Image (tube, rainbow, N blue to C red; front, side, top):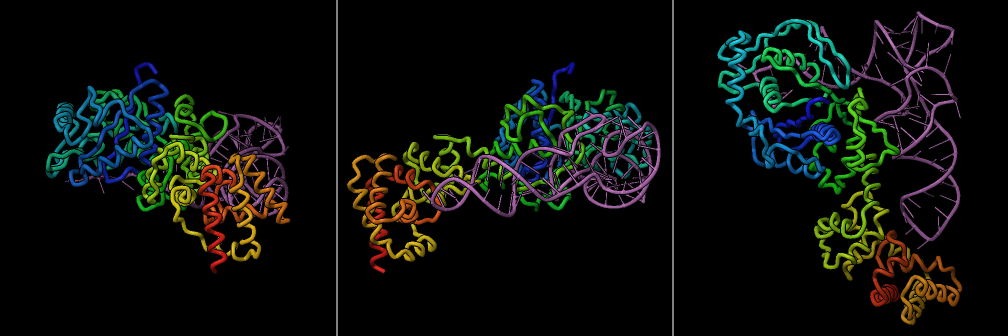
Length: 440
RNA sequence: GACCCCUUCGUCUAGCGGUUAGGACACAUCCCUUUCACGGAUGCGACACGAGUUCAAUUCUCGUAGGGGUCGCCA
């Protein structure tokens, strides 16, 4: 690249950040970061009705969540501002004057139309190669409404010129209109940027992802308990295969590997199951305070107070390989945070079905009370001792302990669970389970 | 309707003239195991079709079909 790379993401504030838009932003961001260029955010809010603060927030929040930081744009400033099209009217007027001077526009019922040059135009595309369009027979394009407001194609081109955009990476749905943009650049006496049209994101049934499809809004991933690094990872792969080992990688890896020539030509369907698998994979990398940080909102929402971060971290680490989404944590660790945990029906049934359970639990209670060394070794010895005395396999005692300690049929490793709960609470819970059984 | 893009397992893909067509997700079976997972092993499963070009086509060309997209005083 001879001149410094300047790319942009130019969403219109519709009230949410679409996953397809996010991926377009992601590719632009990767391209900029890979080439050491600038990534610019420009809000195309020429439609006043949709131009609300909440709609803008959805875009900013979604991008920040994914880690797509912009170098110029709202909240950041920059030499080419303002970065809201609603505030750039004078730029458009200036460029319209140029077209007028060149005799390329005319009025039609109060609107201004751009006179197409009507010659064959080739779009040199970084992804698709040269795409040729025959001289058009379409009617000339309206670029300004009778009320003085401008149309997308015009403002988009003018802003890209003014912001010195070098590469336009956008969805393939724009490809059929790109000749119009090139025509406009030429009429304005400007060299067009390089274009790269990336394939579209399709829903599982094969049509363009729309607002109603599962996973269409970035906010929905935040709400469902996805990790941003997992969504980032999966989105990278929907339209691009990096030259990396394996499909799981970090943002840094992606930046290093990004190459526009590796971007696919065909559309890809979104698969929530695989996206969830990526989340599971990235979840496993989280430890200690980072794990607590991600899980905290979910724990608190479930009424579980996190006062002791190292303790919370231990509980989360004990189950992190068993969950896919961060939102699942409370259901797996709640009994670590409260004494009044419920005993699931299935656990209770299994407990009651075992005629020996009361005797075994009371033996366990005694042996564990006598356990002086509350370590994995000491606990194991105590349990094995009970097994020998009661003439059962140690394995038969484990489910009983699990049910008593957690009220659940699934959960962390029993000994790990015992280590985290501590001797006192373990004995207390074993006794409680025993008394529930003898009462009923 | 016109124009544009696309076409390898169910899904995401590797492949860039000669491969037993590879991997990932999902699914199935088995192993590991106190539960649930993780992990390991195995299996299932694809070059849309038809012509060319070539000694040889998944790979190159053309056509057909299918899918997607665009043709606004929306962005």
